[in-house]
Image 1 (cartoon, rainbow, N blue to C red):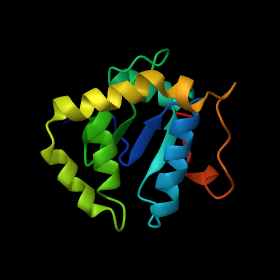
Image 2: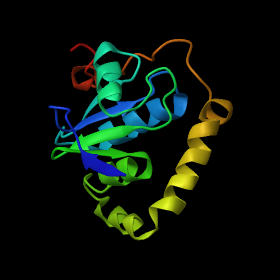
Image 3: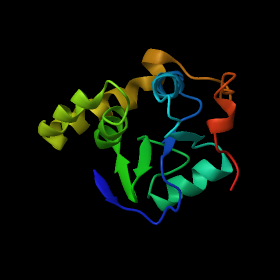
Image 4: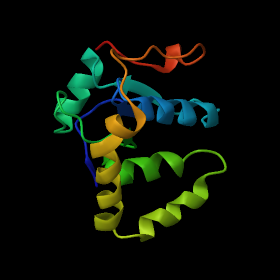
Length: 140
């Protein structure tokens, strides 16, 4: 799902900071995003909670990651594909947009609903690893 967004910052990825899988996703992106196009914000931070609210995502019960690119907000599987397809060497993932969103989002929701049980959960928002700290936005 993509839509125009009132969020003023571009290239910001909203993620669940206590989710082990989501934190791994952020590290995966950061390692491949050599140009530093993307920044990251955990939904548990003031900035992340404000962004979530602006995108109609419940900060207390996050069910999706999101990214704002070129003034558009992408959610669920669209967000993952929008991010991947902009990473060097991963442009080929745009083919995923050919799969109907209904199917993609069904798989996305299955993983999202079971992410803590399968991958685990941090007690608190995980601290970013060295070298990534300057790309994490937490304050408004």
